Every structure is written in C-alpha cells, then in structure tokens.
Image 1 (cartoon, chains in turn brown, green):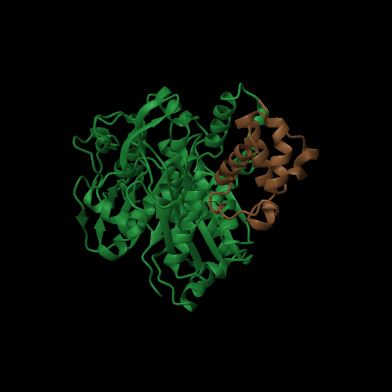
Image 2 (cartoon, rainbow over the protein chains, first blue to last red):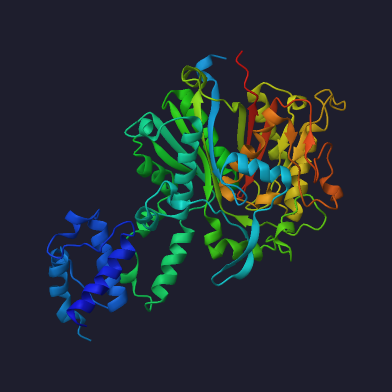
Amino acid sequence: MTKPEIRQAVIDILADIAPDEDFTSMKDDVSFREQFEMDSMDLLDIVLELRKRYKVQIPEEDYPKLDNMNSTVEYLEPLMQG
Amino acid sequence: MDESQRIVITGVGLTAPNGNNLAEYRGALLTGKSGISPYEIRYFGKTLAGICNFEETKYQKKKDRRRGTRAGSIAIYCANEALNDAGIAPQAVAANDRTGVYVGITEHGNVETENEVYNISQFNYDCSTWSHFHNPRTVANNPAGEITLNLKITGPHYCLGAACAAGNAGIIQGVQQLRLGEVDLALCGGVSESIHTFGIFAAFAAENALARNDDPAKASRPFDKNRNGIVISEGGCIYTLERLPDAKRRGAKIYGEIAGYGMNSDGTDFVLPNPDRQAECLWKALNKAGVQPEDIDIVNTHATATPSGDVQEIAALRKVFGVSRDGLPPAKHPYINNTKCLIGHAMGAAGVLELAGNLPAFADNIVHPTYNCDDLDPGCEIANLVINEPKRIDRVDYILNNSFGMVGINSVVIVKRYNDT
C-alpha cells in the first residue's frame, strides 16, 4: 500500500473506533490523544483492527509509534507491502 | 411506620417494545398496541421478538455505545429518563456517593461472548482477534456500572442476577438500601438485552417453550388455550426511589409507595415453577405490607404463555385470593391482568416494566387488559381476569406484581397509592 492508502486505512479505523470525532482537520504531526478524545483502550483498538483488517502484528514495544498519523504511516509502510 | 422507612417511587424511565416512556407505553397497553415483530438472528434464523427503538445516542456518545453493551445502553437511557421524570438534574447525582444503582438482570454476557466467538470464527479462531472490551462488557455488574460511568455516580452499583424475577429484585434492593440509610437515592429496576443472543431462542425452542404464530401481534397469548410459548423481548425500566421525607422536601411527584415485597425460592426444580412457593411468596409480600388479599385491587401476573407456567401461577393466585382467611369466599377479589401479551417477556426488565405499565391506574382507575386471550384455558380461569378490553374500576389503592424465574426464584412487589398520612 502507498502512504496515502495507509493513511486512509488508519482514518477508516479511527472513524470506526471514535465515531463521535471529526477527523477531516486532523494534524498529522500531532498526537491522536492530544487532538481527540482517545485513550489507551483506543490504542488497543487500533492495534486490533490493524491485525484483523491487514494481518499486521504490532508488538507492545512498538505501540508508541502509533502516536500520531505521520509516525503511524511511517511505521506501517514496510509492514503493509503485501 | 417511621416516615424515613417509607419508600416512594418518584421517577420512571423505561423502554419497552411498544413505548419509550411511561405515557407512550401506557397508551399502548390501553389500546392493545403490540411491540412484537418478525426477527432474525444468526444460527437460529427467523423468529419473533420484542425490539426496542429508543434513541441510543440521546444520552450516550457513539463511542461509549461501541465500547459497552446493549444492556448498558438500555440502562443508561432508562436511568436518564427516570432522573428527568423525577426532576433530578444529572449534575445532582454526579460525584454523588449517596446514589445507589441496583439493576436486575436475567443473564448477562451471553450476547458479548457469542459475538466474540463469532468474530474469531471469521479469523480462523485466532484468539488474538478477541476484543479487549470483552472483559468490561461481560462483568456481571456491566449494565449498572455503565449507568455510573455515564452519570459519574460514585455510590454503590451492582446487578442482581435473579432470572425473570430480577426487575423486582432490583426494586427490593433499592428499598432495602434506602431503609438502611446506605444511600439517599436509588436508581433501580431491571434490563434485558436477551434478544441479541441466539442461545436464548435456541434454548427456549429446545424446551418447546418458544412462541410461534403467523401474526407476530398474536404470538404472546397468556391464559389462552392456544398459547404455545414465550416471545423474547429486550427492554428496561429504572425507577428513582427515595425516602418519603426526602421526596416531600423537594416537592417530588409521587407515583406510589412500596408497601411490601416478598422473595423466596422453590427449592424444587430447575425449570418448573412451584405454586405452593409462589403462594407463600405472595403471603410474604401481603404480610409485609400489612394487608389482606381483598385489599389488593390489581394483580399483574408473570404468566409467560407457556402451557404449564400460566396454570401454575393461576393455581397460586387461587390459593391466596380465592378464599378469605376464615375459608369463606373473599369479600373482594382483585382484578387480574398480564402485560406480556403486548411486550413479550422482557426477562430482567419484565417485573419492573409490567409494574410500571400499571402504576398510572392509581390516577386513571383503569386496569389494562390481557390481550390475545381469545379462548380462555379452563386451567387459567380466575375471578376478575380482565380480558381484551380495559376495565374501569372505582378506585385503585394497591397494585401487586408477580415475577418468577428459573431455578425457582419468586418475587412479589406491592405498591400502594400514595397517601400523605
């Protein structure tokens, strides 16, 4: 997947797990938790949905890479080349 | 009785398959509006159910709904509606440890576990796709706990697992905790999300106790010769209960006073009811209320429209209401009705929903009828059974609600017209 495709995949997941939020004006370099009402359970949801939808396994020590959109896409790019 | 021991109902919040507030629901009960519809659920297939259509996001964020359960969502809706109805602002219970939440449930967690097993079946049973929310969704305190999360209540909360007697058990718990002085306000009642588990449909079908009918509105037929079982429903009803002096101090509207209650166990069978124990439970409640059978004006039955259960309950009622204590015909016999004919069996919510549907009788003196009883089973004959047409009576002072459940659990609640003296 290309970076824009990965970004859209993450947006789709976020829209499902935080349906009250509007992600259209998201700042890609700012932490999800700073911009939106999200917590550690949401992070677990992102990990779970990536596993279910794209078979991406993310070890716990890599969870900090999912802090904001830029770092998430950077991290996922090599894992979503299939 | 010391006034601080008198417990009154000051608010009602509910969702039933045929109404999302008391006025709408009462209207449906008086006009015969059924809440039963065709329904389909995975594995089991096509059946009938009582489905609620309240607005989930009226009091709850979409995200909290996604994290929680249908039972929790029902509980949140009912609790907020009850507070509104009682004239208590949600801010008044936030961070308040003198508010207790007591919610009856028939069962909880089956829906969520079935969903997760189905989910992992789509991923070759890979348990790493199991949701981390399964824990908070399935703990037995979930529906009551979701109320406290939503309203930020810091007092005690828990659920009472009491099969189909659970709604009444919720009320009784609220009364007891208020009388003990443990809390100043009880949000109590019962909820059910049962229609979202295929297992309950399959289990009642396996017992030959699941209703079948080409016309959904005709499927739930308590006391009728052609009844063939239960219609499963979801629903909820939460009351605000307060001690009388507190209710008076704030000028609260009072629906009625909890006059008495009884709970006991059959100790005889997993499934089959025991009319002797049911009669004893009725007497417990009458004695606690300090009244005689002839003082009761309306008996709202539990009858679920199973062939044997309805007969057993009527047998219990005949024992208690059929003769006076001196063995003579009673001076007065209560009017008997049933609510499941229109809403089906709302399980943990059944007792409280059915009682709520009768509370307006204190004001309008109308006994809502038992519908779909087109050909009365002789085994279910009893004096003053109100069939198919509402019955206006002179005055209603006492309403009694029966709710019985599996593994032999019985509950009776008696509500009295509120009288200041």
